[in-house]
Structures are given as structure tokens and as C-alpha cells.
Image: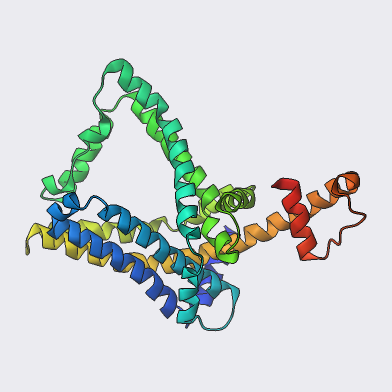
Length: 321
């Protein structure tokens, strides 16, 4: 808990007087999301006629989000004010952010599929209909209370297999999300690094830090719930305006609040990343020195300067990757 407090205090100190550009960066991401959500609400037929619309939204969001992440990373790495050019530097990585996102998503989906195997087997054996299809839709209810009541009623009547599957899914998502969390920070440091290696580095950096990472994430739960709850404003707004405009308004409030939350959250997480990376490098140096000392012939090298960062990087790369 002491370290968590340290990371948060560092984030607040780093953002003091320098939060404008980071906020703008995340606001742009969220405004784009708001735009696409508004289009889908006002013109639902357009979403059906242009099936690639969601793909376009996803790709655009990935690039914008990475630029925001790099802005945060630059913020924590230097003491000078963050400039707009720092933000635009996030677009100089080519397709690297897109590939990283897809590679991370692929692995996460594979793990989710594995977690769902018990439920899939159960559905095949019992011929049960898909639970997802039974989930209540918010638009069908006049108040948030009735919607939450219907949701809990469905979950309460679920079988033990369903409970077990969703518990396993919850654990898998948390664990793997934590392991993959650093990938954007890693590639923001190196434009030439492959996304496969970046993901392996992220997993390596999180070894011994999973509990700290979880506690750090959990410490933001209150802020996240408050921001997320802003979506419930759609219910009272329905009493004074048309349902579609109420939904758009609630989305607008949510996305603006979420941009503020993201600036604080990712600045804190960037400090955590740098700390985890530092610990991993120190550990790797020790391992590299021990392995090198006992395998000098393997490296065909008489000596390695363990004070030279480049030689350490090359040696670690040969040892592990």
C-alpha cells in the first residue's frame, strides 16, 4: 500500500500544471468514441449498411489511444511541460500500436476461450440456450433499479457451472490484463521493437508485481464506479427528452469524466511500469551475469561490460529471447 500511495503521489505531482495536453489527448479519444456512438444511435441503419464502421472506430481509437499513452509516458519521463508535438510523436510508430493491440487481444481472447470451455461443454450436454442471449437490455427498463434487479435475478438463477465459468473468466481477465498492461509503454520507448517481444517483456516485467498491480488497479475502483455510474443518468434524462438524446447526453458526460479519470490512472500506471521495469532489469542483470560466468564459451566473448547498457541489453536479448 505504501508503494501504491507513492505512485499516486508521483502522478499528482507530475500532472500539476502539466495536465492540459494529456487531458486533451484522452479527450480526443473519448470524443471519437462519442461520435461513433452518436452515429449508431441516430442512424442505426447506417451501422447495418456499413459493417466496417465498427472496425474503423476500433482502428482509429487504437492509434489515438496510443498517442495519449505516449504523451503520458513522456510526461513522467521529463520535467519540462508536455507539448503538442509530444502528443503527435505517438503517431510516428506506424502500425506498431495496431499490431500490438491485435496481438494482445488475440492472446486475451484465447485465454477467455479456455475459461469458457466448461460452459461450452455444459451447453452442449444440456442443450441450454446461451446465457448471453438472456441478458436484459437497459433500453427495456424505465429505471436503473428495475434493470439491476432483472440482472441480479438472472444471475441468481444460474447453474453452478455458469458461476464457476464466470469466476474463472474473471480471474483470467484480471491476471492476463495485468500481464499485458505494459505493452503500450514498452513500444512507446522503442519504435523498432516487435510486438511479440514487447508482450514478452510486459509479462517479464510483471513477474513478482502481479499483486501490487492488482492492488493498484483496485485502488481506483471508487473513481471508476463513479465515472461509470454516469451512464445511469440516461434513466432520469428519459423523463425530459427523447430516449436517444438522453443516451447521447449520458454518453457525453461519461466520456468527458472518463478522460479525466484516464489521465490520472495512466500517469500512476506509468510510474508503476517504470518501477517494475527497473526491478526486472536489475534481476535480469544478476541472472545474465551468473549465466555468462558459467557459459562464457557459449557467447564466444571474453568479457562483457556489465556497466554498459547496450552490452547488457544485447546479452539479455540473447539469453531470453
